[in-house]
Image (cartoon, rainbow, N blue to C red):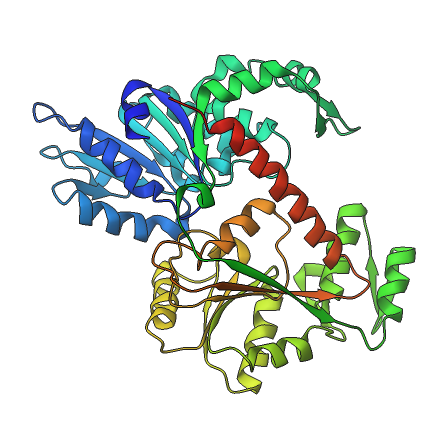
Length: 420
């Protein structure tokens, strides 16, 4: 990877989760250091990963100043700015950077997003630009091309023409499937390099378990599924559109539903008893939830059965989240409860062999990343994954969709994996 970076000013590296992408990036920076003049590098990474990234910089490049903003840069040393995607726009417009690294670059997969626009503007004033992620796409390969476009805008000059040429589109102009265009393969092949985690590392086996859950009374769920409207305790629950309907059905399968202003109404929770019974059989584990309210319910159940836990959430401060992770690593608590989007990256937890999906994430990227929080370098034991699925709901369909996307992702990695 470092050899390719030194020979190319821009490139995408799609290396599976847990393969040491941070170390690859830091090796590149170390190889570019110039004793004659000061150099400035920028690393854009998810907010939850910043503290870990800074630790790695201080460990492997102790002579380099680590800053979170250009205001902290010093003139006498080489600098690395480590900041998050939401803060890209705060970087000054008049500075040219020697190197720019997008960590977890799938955050730039939407061609029309503000993050994509800001990333493209930042890349335009950087000499070298590289993308790193273990899960480059959630759906079709326009998401891969979006990342390539940040580095080389002329490859996708007009979104409309690009989409019509390579994809079959729906009524909302969203890609539904890909046309069999070898030209798209060639573009991606020349700009990407990578491989799956299992092809790069010798990791323990993984075993998946399906934990069956069942409604005692499914009338409310069935009525809303059929009609798109239902009344609960005087509150009207309405499906404004298909996406809203699907989201509220998922909430109902977890024992609640949000009404106006994000206020939850408690319903029958078919997951509660199977979840408690499962937890009583495990020594420790990492528990993922989709919804914030799920996380609260999980905490209440754990307290009821006298199991200790800490919580990782986007609502916490960085200090609170770091402490929650350290308490779990040190064995001070039995379980770490995390919202999927907050805990799917940046965690290194070989101290447990169990992941419990109380409720599944709706993104394949988040799901795939989350699996490697425990199955990674340093893990010596077989890893167990428990997924709670409520009978007669969208849960099993979601599992099948995630499996289908996993197969598609593995096939795409065959395209990235090539001789240099």
